[in-house]
Image (cartoon, rainbow, N blue to C red):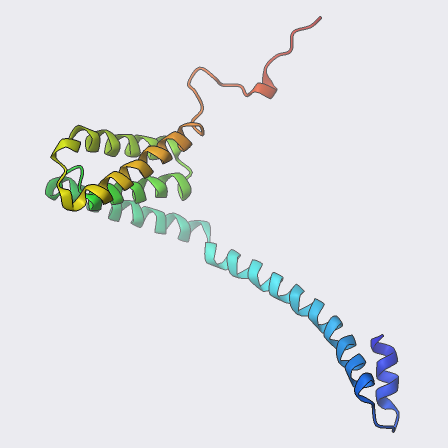
Length: 168
């Protein structure tokens, strides 16, 4: 269609509104597909660049762990186990372990500790933070339930597909 429209456009005659619309549609379809392809390619390249190199990613993760551990130490000395900031910190740190470090064991351990500490002092929770604290504790519980399914059991070294089949 574009080739036919090129020939029409090269004629020394004025184009009608319909002909101009056909030229526009022909080029729009050709260019639109290329633009979509370039946008997809650009998006993929941006994602790859944002991931950084393995060394950069490891360095960022190490710095994050140091910062989280310092924040946890400060929260443990200055805030009650039911304080929303302390619970939120545990929620975020455990999500970091799970999502960024691919460590469901550490994520579950941290989540369980924060949840258990919060439950133990639930009766000392003040009215101001009750709603926030219970909401965050519910999120901790939900994550713990979800993430424990990702931890392989110690005695279960083979998956269901790897189990030996009984001969008949």
